[in-house]
Length: 249
Image (cartoon, rainbow, N blue to C red; front, side, top):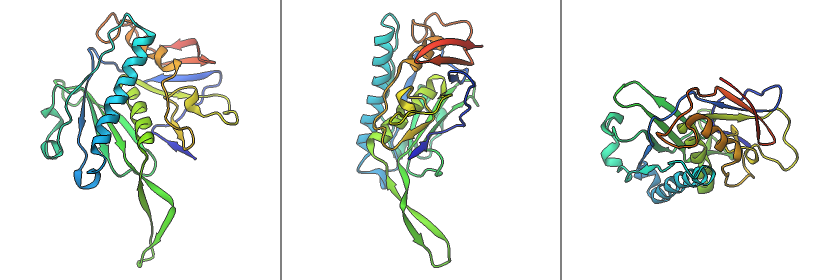
């Protein structure tokens, strides 16, 4: 089963294509996780804290290994309690430029998404939303009014981590990795890039691949956050077998 993470795939005519958001952080990101509603996720909120820290660390470790001369450290702030942020505004947390939010209900089409909020010039940030429940396709409830509903079931922690790692890629400025040729038997799109726009139910925990690391250097340079950044950011780059062939600006 394929699960769309978010966005619309555009398949290039030649080679696989990696698109960017044409956005980047001018300094090292600072991540804040906001505690989910304890009435819904009381048993798993600590798991989400661990997943957030592990997901950020995976990105930091991969980038540091690939570009060891760069500064890729990301500060993770203490989790913001539900009772503190339930009625708060995002502007109340100006130190956070990546905000991680866990919400229980998906719209049935996306398991997560990320978007920029530049509505206030004094606090530009990215919001990462990860859904924690999915529709149980095997459970159908026939209501007395004639309507049909499906029950929700909690997503596995490994799937939630895969979604968050993918959405963090968006928060850094990556879009999606789209493929031009059909996947081979036993191959999943995430085998080529973690930023492939769909997850397969059998693919397991996804891993950072070579193309996203290359694209991060195209956006930020090899010096990391706040270093000597490239003058231009690519709109998209093409890959063949994980080898960068060309970029469009």
